[in-house]
Image (cartoon, rainbow, N blue to C red; front, side, top):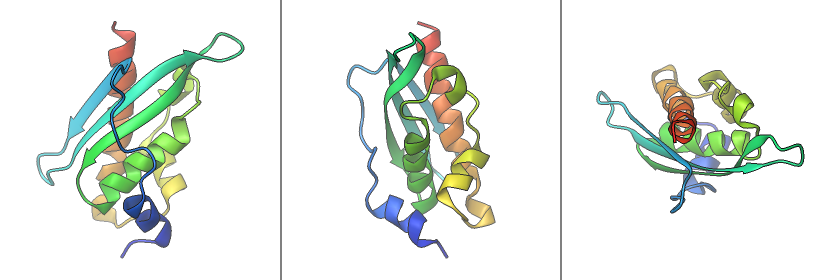
Length: 125
């Protein structure tokens, strides 16, 4: 049902956890399936002075696809400029993750939405 890449991210997620002094936190959930996801971001600056995602962590309670999608999201955006990270979509997550069953595509939407909420939380402070 799931590819080996999806299962690898599920079995050994690299980005699970919280950032205690996070600059922004985004929380999303899906009441239908019960998935919950928090994205924690730490913002820094690159050599040009642009804001970047210095660190990204997730805390995900959900299915294989939810955990894998949130972990892959972190792989994609860590080190990325904030303005570019705001443009990351679920299609970017799915492209990196690989195929998931159609009924699990919403997990990639949750991941991208949680990231945007974390960035918006940071920007509102």
